[in-house]
Structure formats: structure tokens, C-alpha cells
Image (cartoon, rainbow, N blue to C red; front, side):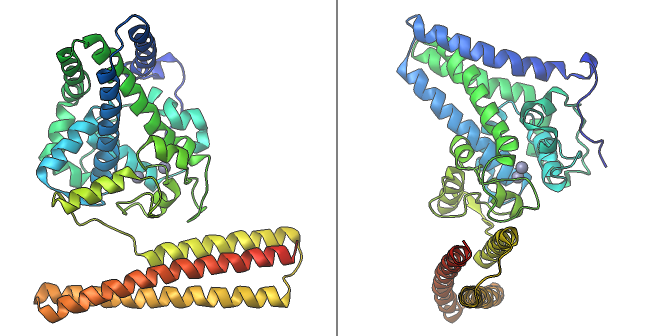
Length: 388
Ligand SMILES: [Zn+2]
Ligand SMILES: [Zn+2]
């Protein structure tokens, strides 16, 4: 077991290279960008490159470092793995081996002293101070054996500062120099962009463990927060993510802002990504119902008034319908696994047709789950009014 994470004592406990980077980069990025904008150097193409490199680097972290390498939520073909590793490397958030080691610890020991960015130590600790006191432990191959076995990961770990320097400074400066704006390349597309990547990622560890909703579980501090999702290309649905970390989606609902899931899905359409892991809708709905029922029970307990017989009956009926829909979806899912296993043994047109029919039935079952959950919520609101 690793040492607990706590603020060190005195200046000697400070990790100075990281700390100086974290202090100088915002100062240089903001002051340099202000000078660039006001001294006649402003260039629209450089500004566009700032946003493009912010997005590419963020996706390298979310789609690469996080969902692909740390959680193995899908499998990527070689070129995509390399691209995501290079883009993630441009964030100056450490090698993927270190990042994943810390992130896996975060999930495993969340909200304890063994969680590197434990929110229990406050917003600023989770946001950035844990890095100030980062003891830079060497990566133990036994802790991340799957990643250590990957030569690409070991290569990136070994040459990390070089890779990060080339991807985050040399390339943007060279591109901007091509249109006559190397200073914009340095201050805007490199330095300010690194700061934007840093603090948007950091907000997931800080704000997404403090502010937002907990639709799936309150056994940990993680919260769904649309604002951080907006800044981090989908990572803000953090309550869902902590509950179902193997899912390649964080924003599980179709309308939720999760460009990373759209990117991964698009890569799967192009044949670059396979084995996209999705948690079954009935498992997600069961957790949702559990939390909704818990909230209602707490509300009723606070008011200390029993429910009317009518409201109780309406709730019971709605609950029965949700359970019926859950069981139906679970039966279909089992059947789907059975057909898939048969198909792997011997493919036939009949089995393929049966699978296609089952997929349609599952889609309908998922719609039924959503509508029965919505009906339960209407009944719960009615019950709330009945005791108001
Ligand atoms: Zn978290
Ligand atoms: Zn995670």
C-alpha cells in the first residue's frame, strides 16, 4: 500500500519543478497573451489554433489517458493509440503511466487519504495542492501491470519531457511561425493552452467532487456537473463515471455534452476503436431508482408525516412497473449474451436475424425503463404534495 497523501511540512516538502511550472505558466500565458493581443501581434489563425490544440490535448487526456489507458473502456488500433498518447502528452500532466497510476488510486481509494486528490482535504488540495506536494513516486510495474506491459507506455514514460516539449511547444510555435506569428505560438497556442488544459482537468478533481448532482450514488463525493463537462469535453458527469468507471461514456444520456464519447463512437464507426464498453441500461436504471427512493425516504423522514394510502398505492404501482421493466430488460440482455455466444461458435443467418430482432426489443425495453422511471418520479412528486 502506498503512503497516504498529505501536505508536507516546510519548503523542502514542495515539489519545486512542478510548482514553478504551475506558477510560471499562467503568469507567462496570461501576460504574454495580453501583450500579444494589444501590441499588434493578434492573429485570428493563432487564436483558432489555441482552441484546436486545447480540444486535441483535452481529448488526448479524456479519450486517451483516461478512458482508454486508465479504464480500458474500449480498445484502440495502433495509430489511434499513438495519436491519443501524443495529444495527452501535450497537456503536461505527466506520463500516461504516472497519470493512470494516480487515477486508478483515486477511484480505488476515493475520499480517503490514499486518494491522491482527496476532496476531504479541501477544494485547493484536490485542484492543485496535491501536485505541489507530489512526491514523484517511481511507477511500480506491479501497480499498473497492463500498461507497463505496453512498450508504447514505457516509451512515453521514459521520454516524457521530450515528447511533451515537442507536442506542446515546438509544433504549435512552428505552425504559428508559418503564418508569421511565433510569439502567438509560444504565448497563446502553447503556454495559455497548457494552462487551460491544466485547470479544466483539475476542475474534475475539485469542483466535480463538490458541486453538482448525485443521480447514481452518494457513497462517494463525485458529482455530475454540466459546467465541468462543458470545459472538459464530457468528463463532468463524474457521479456516473465513479459508479460505472468501465463505461466509455461519461454523459450516458443522449443529450449530455460528452464529445469524448462521440469521438470514441466515431472512431469505432471508422474501425479504429473496438470493444466499446457500455454498462447495461437496466443496471444504470436500478441505481437511479435506488437513489430516487432513498431521497424520497429521507424527505418523508424529515417531514415525519406518513404517506396517504392513495399516494402509497400510486408509488407502489409505479415501483412495480419499474421493476417489471428492469426484469424484462435483464431477461432480454441474458438472451442477447446467449445468442452472441452461439454466434461466436457458429455463425448462421438465423442467429444473426434473431440478434437483430433482440436489439430492437432491447431498444424498446430501454425506452420502457425510461418511461417507467419517469412515471415513478411523477408518483413521488404526487406523494410529496400529498404530505406538503
Ligand atoms: Zn473523481
Ligand atoms: Zn476515471
